[in-house]
Amino acid sequence: MNLNKDAVSRAGGTSEDGAKTVLALAQKLVAGHSDLAASAEPDFPELVQTRYKGVLEALATPLTESSYYVVFSLQYFAAHQAEVERFWNAIATTKADPEYLDKIGPETR
Image (cartoon, rainbow, N blue to C red; front, side):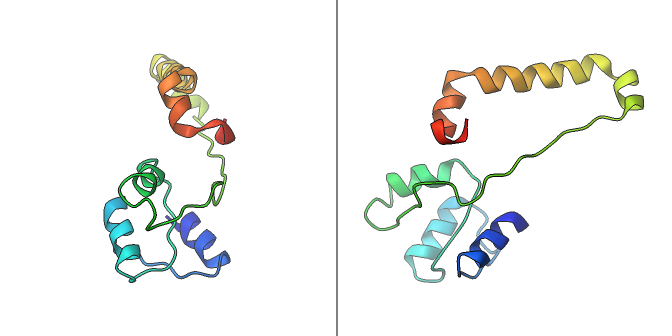
């Protein structure tokens, strides 16, 4: 993800794209193959707080905050209105789900 690479670079680190999972990324840090890592995966902070507690340290606040916008063309909306409505309703349901809110934490709401 270029956003993470840019954020790591601004923080003075270098990036590599070889890690396929957050576990592999954490293992690269522990092995000294990387000094700094960024991931949008929600499992990464949990991994740092459990399996790698006392070995790795995560920033208390997110490295970046970004907004992503989903836009449908009028033609697509006209042809697929029910699907679009289901999509927006699913997002609203997820954003109100207590389990989801617990995972994202109060600072990202």
